[in-house]
Length: 115
Image 1: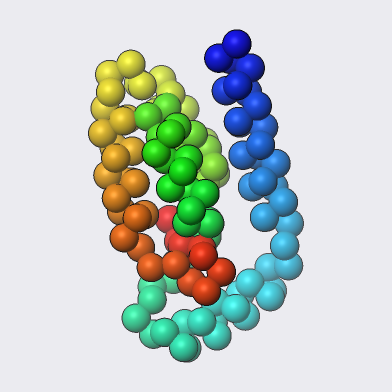
Image 2: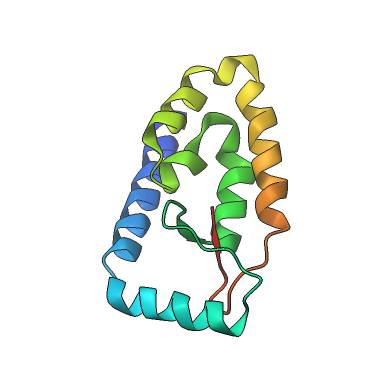
C-alpha cells in the first residue's frame, strides 16, 4: 500500500514539473530581467531552478528524507543518492538544512524561489 502512495506522489510531482517547464521561456527571461531591475539585491543564476516555495517546503518536510525534493527540481542523481542512503538518516539531516534554507529565501511576486 505504501508503495502505491509513493508512486502516486512521484507521478504528481513529475506531471506538475513537466507542466511548469512547458511555459514560454522567453517570457520567463523577460520577467527575471524586469524583476532583477526592480530588486537588484536578488541573485539569479541559470544553473538554479525556479520552484514554488510552498510546494517545495511541503515536499521537503514530508518527503525530504528520501530525496523527493531533489527529483522535483530535476536533480535525479542526488535524489537517487538520497533514496539509496535514506536508511542512514544522513539525507534527513541534509533535507532539514535544505528546508530551513528554502524557508528563509524571499519569494518573488509569484511565490517562486530559486534553488
